[in-house]
Image (cartoon, rainbow, N blue to C red; front, top):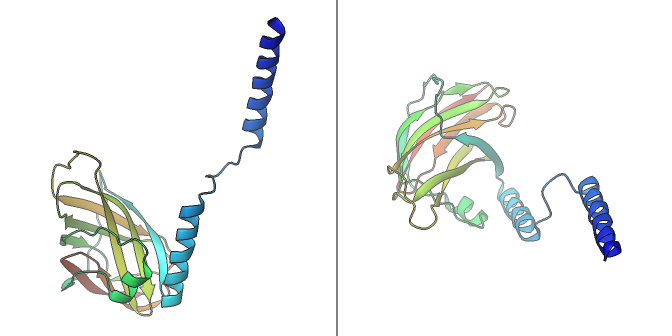
Amino acid sequence: MKWIIIVIILFMGGYTYLTLHFRKPNRSYEPYNDLKNRGQNHNLLTAGYQRVTLTAAEPTNEQPVESTVVATPAPGGIPEELKNSLFDQPVLPESYANLHAPASINSLLPFRVILDCTLADNQQQFVSAYLYVKNDRIYIVPEFEKLAGELQSRTRSAHVQLLLPGGVIKSGHYQVVLVGRASSLGWPLQVN
């Protein structure tokens, strides 16, 4: 019996060492998600869009943003061409109450936008945000998801900070649209 216990201990020790030593450091291969992302990227590139993932957070102690932009209301919803290029349609906020963003930025520096939005119900939470660029149009699409089970947020509003890394957008004049379900906001942006 003691030999069986010794063999089990030696086997477990060797297996643990080999597993920890040769384990892949990054995330594992997920065929469904990887193929879906590749297909969506192919659709976006075919339609002429560049997609950039924005760093997003709900700020706790926010730094002020010099807001020089005057946003005008725009029709709600994702443009049809962009909508057809996306596999999964994002859950959008209903509308926007407040926006702080600069009207002119340096293309090499990060671009920060702070927004307040109204949600469809109390069962949504902020997940991520993407920026889509095509020619002289920029679409910022914040995405929300339903909370699991009976969970609810305290309010139907969200305060979100989006950060675009520098060096992503080329110099030029752009029309930016912050996409909402019922109503969106649009403003001109000068990138130097």
